[in-house]
Length: 245
Image 1: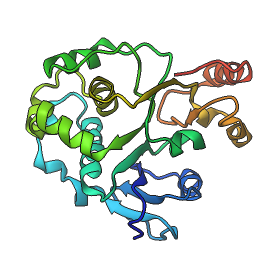
Image 2 (image 1 turned 90 degrees about the vertical axis):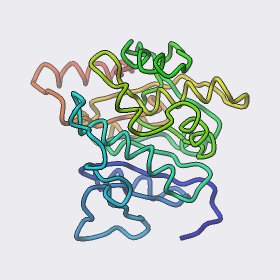
Image 3 (image 1 turned 180 degrees about the vertical axis):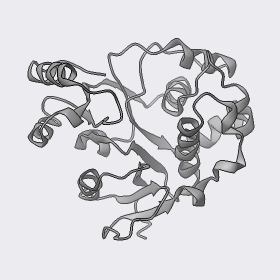
């Protein structure tokens, strides 16, 4: 591993998309894939990390939450920031394409026009974190390790404490909580609104060429409901360059 870099990329994915992996591998940064199972055929230039090497599901009682798998993945993202030997660890959701400028930035927090759900705000309030009415849940975050360690020690205290404060009206978002902490305690951070398009899975592959021109972020979300009318609506929204997400 080349340790001269102070920043790396880490895609977190239960079912890795080969095309997305190849896209991020092309950037001149050390690249990691955090995934439950190592594929039979590895891609050259990709550093594979198993979920269990970072955090075992059985270590904490995720079953007490209404979305155990979802919260486990959030814990994984935070834990891998602590594990990897870099000043900055850029975490990216495995179904998401992000434009190059956002990858290269280290001092920018991104947000979308979508209104933040009050349940994420409720979680922050329990820990005395600030409440900024912007949606920082945009499928990626560039974590500064030193800042995150400070946040964990001063705010969260322990992993168990995080779980104890999750309920049906209080939701953890690793991205939203971290962004609020950073914007409160650091002065050299820029805020940038980005244009997001979710449901890229319903578009043709050629639409990805608009990344960085028409949209800053395109997410593939095939797990969500799809029908004929939904597919048509998504394509109309994309054609007229609307934000979706």
